[in-house]
Length: 251
Length: 315
Image 1 (tube, rainbow over the protein chains, first blue to last red):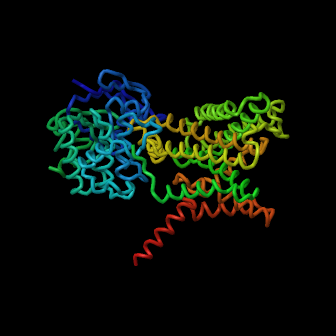
Image 2 (image 1 turned 30 degrees about the vertical axis):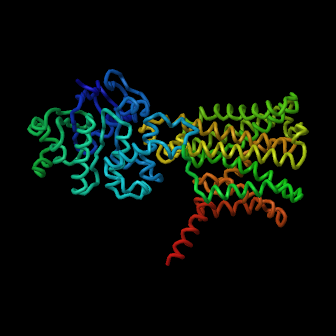
């Protein structure tokens, strides 16, 4: 059963078609990777799905509803959360407050004017911080954490919305090989634990082939191949435009 | 429900309140008037900070809601003879409604565009006050405001102001430290991400604007009665600029900062006017200092000093 489907999805930035007639479907509980060279349109594709950008034409269907053109906050509420390639946290708040506020929003308590903000969701916050391994940094100012820890926080914020589908945009971008290993293990565990459907972009091919059930290859805004890792790996078109060197380097 | 207030802040507030209660006993008219005016401006600046410090937008037109509260209260009391118990809340509601109308348009925008639009609307309010002579008195001002007899007098009016301002500040404090207030800070910190945690950021910024407008209206309504009049200047951009400087001087990232800024600036203005006629020059210099060396205002400075002393003591 597919949980997310795009039909004819296109966005035209004044003559530059960043995403072109993309037909894509995400199956329930799969781990699906989107790969492609820089500038292929991976982040734009995520932005279109999550309401950050409005497509020029085409539609996005989530579960049974068309969500094209909905504001991000409405899409999140339906169970589709995302993380960002570039760190996107609440830098002046503490790590604890970052998560606590996300949980306040999840529980729709953000229009609650007369109940203490700092008293909300304290236990859930600690639980989530423990899950991503940030409990010892809870009192630190988020913007002052190390890069890798900020990436973990980024993930935790997305998880706080209790999504059924999680979109991760380059979850390991900028991480050292060691940090990458830890982060991917974490993502893998949480996906299993929570029964999530995962859609992610990733530049590290060992990561992609290590955890993805299915892979789609985006090139110049179009999906040129989609299938199991084996199928994609042996696809001549994919090898020609993208995988060739990367594949040799990682296997 | 546990509210987090640091003991130091709480004690300072209680001491300050205690001192204010005894101000009329000094019998100094000067001191009573000065305290009344500072309380009004402190509330005005604190209300503006809901927009600036908490929602992360700059308003160049906050005087509009101060003026609307003032004019509405004055006109309802005097022209229509309403009792205070109806006129005062009605004035606050009108300020809030005006703020809601403006917020509807402004919250589509951010940054400088937001600020310019607030300025445009405030100039519109100023123009209406200026031109609608039959109702507002135009540039002569609306004078001879009827003040109910129970607060007609320096000392009773002082206590009236103290009660209303204290109650308003408590309500503002609760709102700013509520689940709403905490989420509002997230909106300020990262508008995009706040949307992606499921927050309707436009609505949040709009509500913050309305709360700010309502409490500016409270300050304006008190001030109209205090002065027995309302003048077009109270809606003018210079008034908006002054309250903005108060907020920045005190420190926008602290709840009480703007109140400290209001008191400081008000007292400085009093002193400066005794020695020089160049208050605007002094004001310019103050602004320069804030922007260049005190980005977090006096509260930020105090924090830095405290840290330095603390570290110095440990060595």
